[in-house]
Length: 314
Image (cartoon, rainbow, N blue to C red; front, side):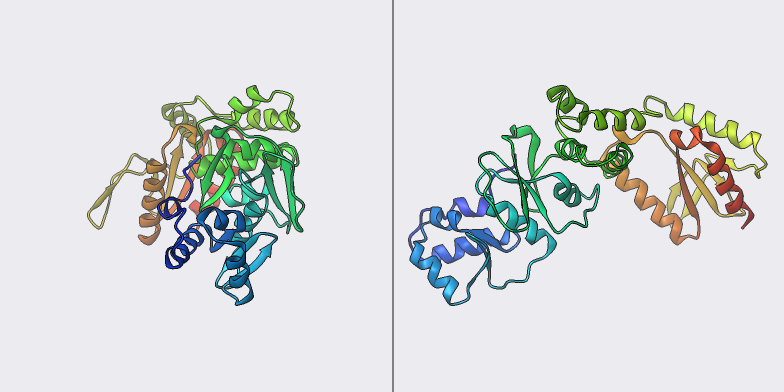
């Protein structure tokens, strides 16, 4: 797990009022504008000093023992952070709330899910789950302690369908969210955990196309195109865009249509992901439409070919 906010440690234990104020401000700055009473006490604040700041409006009560510094207005990230702080030391955002923070599956629920190592505290609007998580299953994102992507997916599996989990796994893949442990590793660690069957079924679906090389994908795509009633494209053409040379996998110049063949992204890198999206943006600015095709798409070619026919006809 990432280190505790580094700004607090240098000032911890100081008794000077100004130093304490600086410590509180720095801590709030890396915790979405929030602090917990137990943190302030560790810094050297006295109970009376905390209560005085509450009374004069410098601190605002959000949950019991959790305060917003300066104002009450919290972002969604702030509400998540407040819930984690309310549940005490070692608490982490988890389940559907963690999935929303990672951006792999949004949640419309007003309740926030938090996993705690000990007996859960009761707080309005918070679902606390008791579990002592290993260090390789937690991390920090946007300053918020949170379950790792793989642990989040495993927790999510207990409350969603295989299809919904499949979508979350693919979104994590597309965002290049990698963990020390994969979801498969955690299924070996927790083979009988609730949701394990759903996770295994979703992984089986995701594995379609895994292990296929880019050359195999290109050969498969050419085979489909040549058997279909489509204009013949140029393969591995050369385009010059404002001094940048781009080699599209498949180009229809007249239609200004490009198909890029994406081999499975589990083994890609974040740098490659960012570079691909930057290139897509440059092509869009130049008036090209870019379609990305994976092996999975070629397993169900009817819809893919129908879409390409429509685009070529425009």
